[in-house]
Length: 376
Ligand code: GMT
Image (cartoon, rainbow, N blue to C red; front, side, top):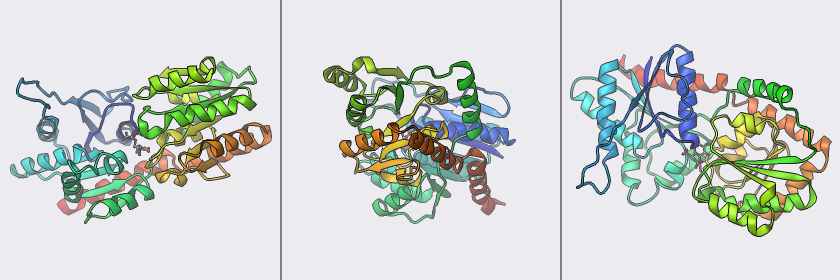
């Protein structure tokens, strides 16, 4: 198949997932064309059936807001025609599903039929998509997609509750390449064995308000009072400065490392003992799954789809999103007993195996075949 993938090219979960999916599809023999305003950050290799097409949005003094959807739909038409693309897979409804629909209509005008598969990732539904400025167009573009997928049962039910959806929504969870994590674990132990008895607590996100960064710092502050530990904060975003300031105020700045964005999160996770994710909304929680694949138990909120991967009392613990005290107590209970920590690590890894790329990517291939069937 020849597939055009539209995604956000940044470190956010939807872009990461779309890129990993495209790279895996190319390994399965498909031809994959990424279309975005810059090369996706995880797209490290452009041979073997992988292509990237940049959407250029020219500036003009009249534009208060440059019309990205217009440029994207024009680019989609061009790429689809030039490369005989079979289908579009757009990640994140806003504005990708909308632009894809316009592209589909323009192509139809030239007697070219290309179906749209739209994947909903979370904030396009639970936060941004709900806004009155977007809701009508988001509903329309979901309903006009040929097939719709979303990343958790929780997101499916939120979408059906909050929008007038006439389409079936297929749940296909996020995935990880467990093999990549296994290799990294071995390398890690070999090249850089853990020497100190200090526990490592990790958080990875885009530091947006929805991630409750303040809680991450406060939970760690409670942990470090009882357990010799440090906090590793990975990512960049609007709440980072606040987080640094809070660490200074609490007198724990020297126990917290802010590492910025990384393309190789598995390298940072391999020595970690516990992962914190107290988000106020989280459709799936790819960062938590990446931690679990690295044998790291998770203390998270019970928001959205987190309970579909993090199993309370088994792979970690879940609490209400603002319950810093329970999160701290649960974290300490896991860390203070090496046997308990070991059991949590094993179960977290075992659960992560359910979301291995080998099991999940074929589900997308099935969806593509379904979308193409009416055209045959
Ligand atoms: O978590 C973010 O803020 C980034 C966001 C995105 O749209 O890139 O991630 C969303 O999609 C991921 C991949 O499907 C999910 O694992 C995340 O849970 C989801 N984020 C939220 O729902 C807040």
